[in-house]
Length: 498
Ligand SMILES: Cc1cc2nc3c(=O)[nH]c(=O)nc-3n(C[C@H](O)[C@H](O)[C@H](O)COP(=O)(O)OP(=O)(O)OC[C@H]3O[C@@H](n4cnc5c(N)ncnc54)[C@H](O)[C@@H]3O)c2cc1C
Image (cartoon, rainbow, N blue to C red; front, side, top):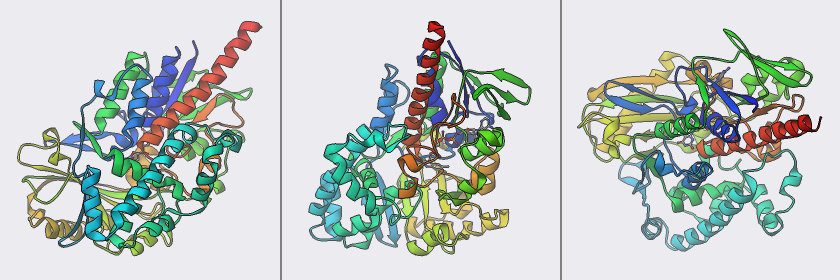
């Protein structure tokens, strides 16, 4: 039995811990914060329970297959509900696009925007399904150490190549002319951290998940998944150490020999670092053992950060759904402020999650729980004045859409932005979602899952493969654990022979 240390308790760290413990190892998870879950933590105040980060439950098959690996099902840990409509996009007053759960209803919505578009949608989704199946079966569960890992994809190769070198944006425009449909079809890849004209068309596989598999919600909030994974990990024998930041990774003879905390040295046979990759390399490892220089990180394209408001409102609000995208401002200008000339946006687009529409446990009776998210560039100067400068106009826009006054009914309010990401998660530039999935940052071109100089040190999470998002973080943890286990098993068989 080897001693395995996991740095960080987000989705990727928890997944890695479960797989390492299942293999019979003595696994410890060290977390700098007082609570488990990383960017997916939750907090409760004034009777409201807020998910701090993720709110969209897509790719339910990935969650299910994670739990199945331990002889369990997601439903053993939380109750899932499909949202219908899955979400709505607000383009302006009286100009709203709901996205129903049933495909027949979605076809009708498409036809109401553009004649003939339901047939285009059927063709688009058929291709998206193929990409999803190939992607999930053959691409994302690979460690991406070499392109040779992808050499056996004969059947899919032609299609995949053409989808790598064209963008989501040009691909979507071949199918749809109506700007609202284009915006809807490009929205799912915004999760991947770049504009649709920079994301390979391969990632329209996300549309299959968003529009065919549907948008789901775990009762009690996204944190219920973390809760479930923590319970699973504990049942496998994993030990958790909250409030315990790792301060140094000690290397001897080309392998990690121990990790250090403020109170001591913990000998270890292998490490999976799920904390932000840049932090682990630049702050916890001697320069000689780093995969990458600080210049390397400066050149990377980071996914956005965000400004978040958590609000408790002491009344019900009509015309909001669980998920609402406010695209009622100039999309290109906002995107340029994130990706082209990083600056605080003028009039931003934003997203409102209102989980109390679905779940009575997240707000007191008769009240609403609101989570408002504005995507912004990383590395901006973050001040309280800047954070608050958007609040009144955003609330005005929500009031105009919902037809109800909200400002005077807010009984709880907290903001969260760049500096919080840095201090809470050691996030490079205050990033929220890690590295963008651009062509130059896909698969083998992402920061490597393994340390090339230290044989028992592996990285996992949203800065390595397969990329940002909760399902990729689960997959990343599994893949990193598999690689560490290979190393440990090899070492054990070598020791037995000796
Ligand atoms: C606001 C927001 C909204 C999002 N919305 C969605 C969504 O709707 N759907 C979706 O799929 N994805 C979403 N994402 C992305 C998703 O949440 C992340 O990709 C995923 O949770 C990242 O998991 P992780 O394990 O890679 O990293 P993290 O969750 O960041 O975990 C890393 C952990 O390491 C800890 N740590 C750091 N340094 C140290 C140290 N020295 N010692 C010990 N521990 C340390 C950190 O405290 C943290 O707990 C969202 C993210 C954010 C921020």
